[in-house]
Length: 258
Image: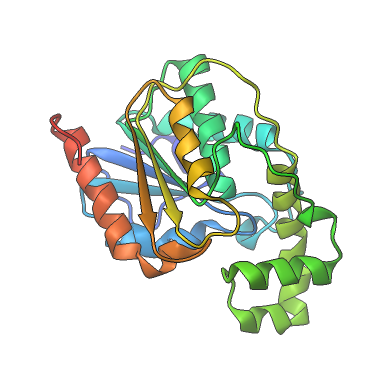
């Protein structure tokens, strides 16, 4: 049964509701991304997994809302939105900005609500304790577009449409500001398992930075390396969906995880 608190959340998109699922998968988009990026994942997941995709302010159906420029502020609001959905085990899958955000939301859920994730999948992002000096959010519009082209995560045709750019650039800039100004605050390690997924040619994270996620959990840790760059997952959707589905199955029927 979906409660009124669940139904009214601006943050949650549930493209294929599965009310009798065993596990909920929460998908957290990358900088400039939206909930619809995970529509194919929601479609491909088995009926045992209820997929929730986060919709950040300032884009698509929330485009009239002010963008948020702090991971901490986003995390605080996401926690409030997600608590009503924690009536069954939660898995997180966060890509890039979404990985950092997922980590901070997981910390808050443990600390403030005693909710421990069944698994945290972090994709294309270095560990919170590994800092790089990045200033994409301070560039001109053209500079931000150049970065998007470099990462190859956006349809090139969209980057030449002035009307589309006017709509999406403010959210992209705000998201970059949030992730680039993020400062990790040392604290208790997570209790949940962490799986890090990364492309072998990702300019934003190397394998040492990815492996450092192991320092942030008392649970198990696994590193999965795929061929490709920052958006490697576009070419490996089936393998990633299978991995998460197998994990969800093990959560529902406790035993050895994949």
